[in-house]
Length: 423
Image (tube, rainbow, N blue to C red; front, side):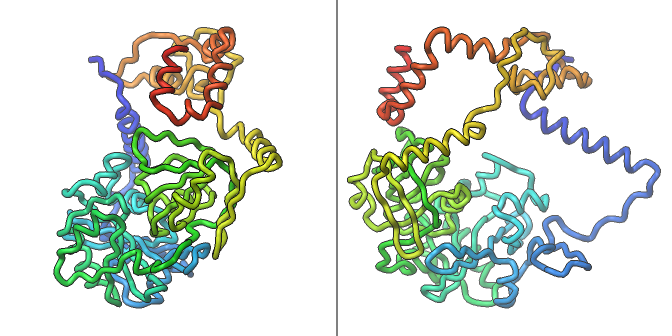
């Protein structure tokens, strides 16, 4: 029987391999005793000295010292923000896990790492967007400016009112101090407004009349792009410093981010930007203040108590191009143009992906494995060399380069489609 090859086969093959390996190791051994440890439960190593290094989670936090053991603290913000992630498993009687946030960076890392669930990608994203989600994912933090404990969700989380109430009850039943809810979006604010007895703290309560807040201390160079409304029609370049009205749900890597409305440092976007190492800040009325720089290259630096922005001069741009050139290996896919022979699938291996493409090379590996019931049709692959040759011989590489330097082409989708159709 022939079976159509799908991406899911990769995961299936990996599972079969692990099962067969485990079976081989187990031959001749007595079956292990059934473990009393539940999935995702606290696991401790008796010889360890530092609890924060070996404990994955706890079901309750009884003291400030215990909270500090598992809390992350961002020191490059105007005020310290110690925080701990939490996961509530609705499938397991609303059991709560206060996650060791020094050990796990994101909720999915904890959920996957403790085998509570192996869902990834879009499947895991349902825990932020679907009312019938299995997990409630949030963060508990101490807000120093107002001296209050708060719990919050990602600003794109569409969590319903009853689950906000469930979270408040669960946390306040397992935490040593009263904890209020901090809405991070208009939707969350509206969903929680009618919940009886729910204490709330808003971002505006925390920032008050604050006109500037550094969300990541860094210095960078880029082209200012003032975005009135971020939707699917807006094109974003990696070399841009975005000026946005509010924190978006997602972003590709950019050169910097400026938000004109107060934002929590714990938002997913702010955590991503911190990982990119680029400047990120809240600047009150940024759309008006920075409109003069729209489309221009600037040097932008975020400091603890202020920001510095100035138009880039030739020295700035020369240094930028120098750094960009040095990172060509990171910004371009690895490619091997020395292979010129049409190769049969059966002779291709994973290491040849830079010459024939990953899909083709991986199909070659599947053919070599000769897996029972799985058939890959015979075929051959045209190496990348000939695609590169075609572009150069017809001058298409130069046309593409010129279009990438055209800012209208980069930012105007209808214009870009027209140019590509002409080419």
